[in-house]
Amino acid sequence: MSKTKNPVQRGRPVNEQARHERMAQILDGARICFIGRGFHASSIAEISAAAGVSVANIYQYFPNKEALILALIEADLERHHDMIVRFWASDLGPAAVKGALSDIFLTKEGHDIAVLRVEIASEGARNPEVAAMLRRSEVGLIQVLQRSILAARDEGRVPRDIDPIAVGERLSLVFEGIMRLYVFSPSDGAILLDRYYGQVAESLHLTS
Picture 1 (cartoon, rainbow, N blue to C red):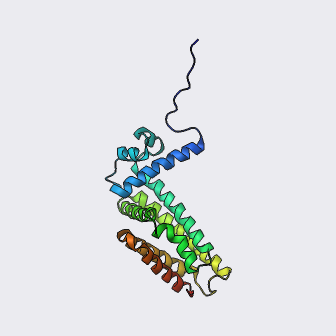
Picture 2 (picture 1 turned 180 degrees about the vertical axis):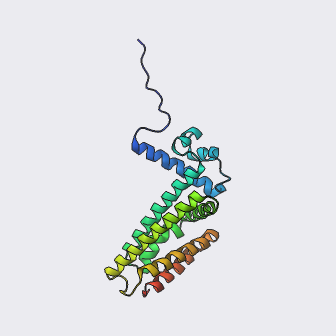
Picture 3 (picture 1 turned 120 degrees about the horizontal axis):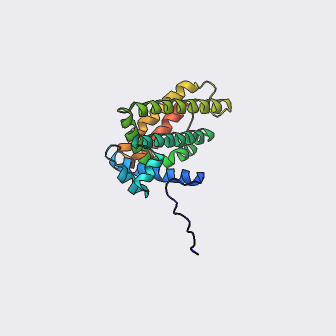
């Protein structure tokens, strides 16, 4: 009697957690390629090699490179949201604020994130779908930021006369500007972090 062998599992894993892990694996490969070579110079074959999966496996999850970059925007949005929450949940002192932002300004991984954001923004200038998603994500982050400032004001961690809308817009614009400087000057991360905290302290009328 011949024994029946279990078939080799191909394609997308049935287990939902395994599927999420595979998608994360593919996105990690795409992130490496987009940071190192840029969006348009990176091929699906290169992404598959960096991710350690087959080209066919990538297409089971993402129909094209545009879908990959949209997924990376979602991941960046979630990461930025978590950073805002950590930032504004702190006592807003220099050590707490710098600690909340140290993963970005004081690590290679943080610099990679800054480079990727520039690459994504560049694609948004050419691709209407990417541009629309970037606009939506920016609106969502500004709303989270303004709610966080309002909560800090209501809890007495910042002065009552603070305008959450005006302060949120200012700090968002300053952060984006600092991040662009960081792209070109990764060794200046600590200096740029100090400069950003200076803007935070001034905007919130804090004494450092």
